[in-house]
Length: 302
Image (cartoon, rainbow, N blue to C red; front, side, top):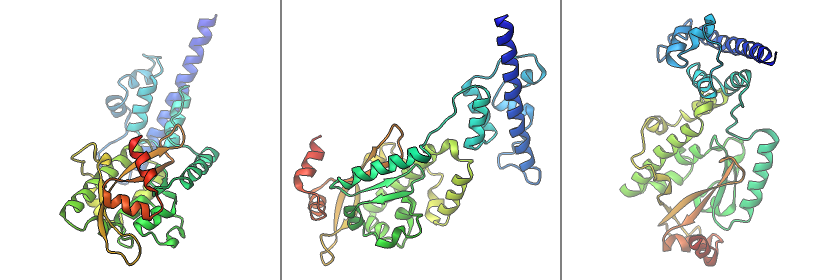
């Protein structure tokens, strides 16, 4: 009796799963009726079977009744270019846990509040960033080190990409003043772009992600580096160079610093990007910015 109930439940679940998959598949077909897909996908049942789920045709005709496992459902969602919501609907239909890579709603608000509290107690330059690289806060040492105008947050759309590529900020010219610094800047740009793409792999078909990319595309250099691969996988741990000074009338001097990421929850983002001095000129600049020498020594001894 129980076995029949379990089989009946599985058949009903499979029917729901196939209905969800077919709804998305046909939706994708409709989206490309007037234009060809960049990868020449046709979103047919046979193509889905060949590309994502080898048992799909058998499931449709009843020769198999086994619900695809969770990883296969994720492969199907990838093939169908599902948004985050569509992918999670497919997983839930199959009675699997949805994927939530980033915090949302009140959980995100609380994490940002915690990040703000932590950052306010840091003597080092620091800023708060989300998984889309939006900047949600920065402290005074950061503002002074990188010469960030006070009105930068007026439109509420400040992003790390803007810091790196926008010529209205002084960060780029001060980070590309000679061959060595330019090569490091370029390498950091390529590494950062690829890390961003990896971190947002499962949301790249979302409307918000596409809007963000459209906004990024205004920077020609970002388009140039978009598909380049970093030469060194440990690039983000390497030191960086920038021209800095101790006071508005002081001369610029090259300093070396490194960047570390502090998570404030079980998720990587939102997090705090903290900047630490590497060489003696950087230590002197950081001390001028309000970071006592003993704090710098403590950070490097930990």
